[in-house]
Amino acid sequence: MPSRLPAAASRQLEQDLRGLPPVDPGPERVIAACIAWLCAAQDNSASADGGVARDYSLLTGWATSYPETTGYIIPTMIEVARRTGRQELHARARRMLDWCVAIQYPEGGFQGGKIDAQPRVPVTFNTGQILLGLAAGAAAYDDARYRAAMERAARWLCETLDEDGCWRKHPTPFAKPGEKAYETHVSWGLFEAERVASGKGYGEAGLRQVEWALSKQLPNGWFDSNCLTDPTRPLTHTIGYVLRGVIEAYLLYKRPDLLAAAIRTADSLADVIAADGYLPGKLDNNFRAAAGYACLTGTVQIAHCLFLLYELTGEKSYLDAGKRANRYVRRTVALEGPAGTMGGVRGSFPVNGEYGQWQYLNWAAKFCIDANLLETDIVRAAHG
Image (cartoon, rainbow, N blue to C red):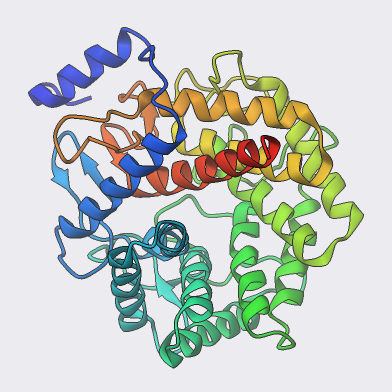
């Protein structure tokens, strides 16, 4: 912790240590606030390039753009534009897409880290996340550049996959070395590319990786080799990643074993989510708390996965746990205040937790929007 905190950081920490704010603003207001925050993050990126600032820090202000998460913010921006009819959101999505196309390496990969990070090398995980955006752009807009960039990225991922289904050749320099089960979230990018351009082996390559990742799953649903830094105590963020990739494999291929694997993980996670929605930010191999803070992005990612599984199985415990988790994160979102924090989602609650410490993260806002959109869809469907 810095020896002397800026006033805004001190105020936020003091507020967080008093406990979770009592009022749930509800899904609609939080979706609108998080979208406005993402727009501000694009407009205020320190690199001013059309990408989305990685974060707003209470210590240093707006960061430079982050290619990886800008990539998967694109589908969220397109979806909200489609639902609301707001053409300016389509324009923002296209600015993000144009930037991603411009920074792609000729062989198809994308760099890790923020746009100004060093070393600049192609990275598997970041490429897979940007592929989600390129596939969404190729499906939504009549622009051959997006499809061509999508195909380059998908081919590169297929070509660099090892025989056993693990990606090892192009790891990120910004996490601890080692195999990563959560790269099922890269496989999801290949599944989306398969939906746009079927029959080229994209989906099959993604499925091979998911099958490899399932070799890391324990009977209780926990995954080994599944964290940025400490695989014995993975973040809920990376647990959310690995689970979503398995679910997306099931949605494309409808293999019962894939659904059963997702259910194993979901059952254990639903049991850990407290009555107020609190989910510890790290979990050990018995799904016991391994951190004293909530990783808010992991909480909403897991909520989204639970909602998807509720739709697939009808299991009400998934719906209830997902609602609790979403409600917890919504209560942390400020609907008024400075532009950097209003509508933003902190990395951790309290804000001095080790994940995204002192920061409001662009991907946390993205996943919060996605999870709340699905919750509102489920609630509306239940009420006819």
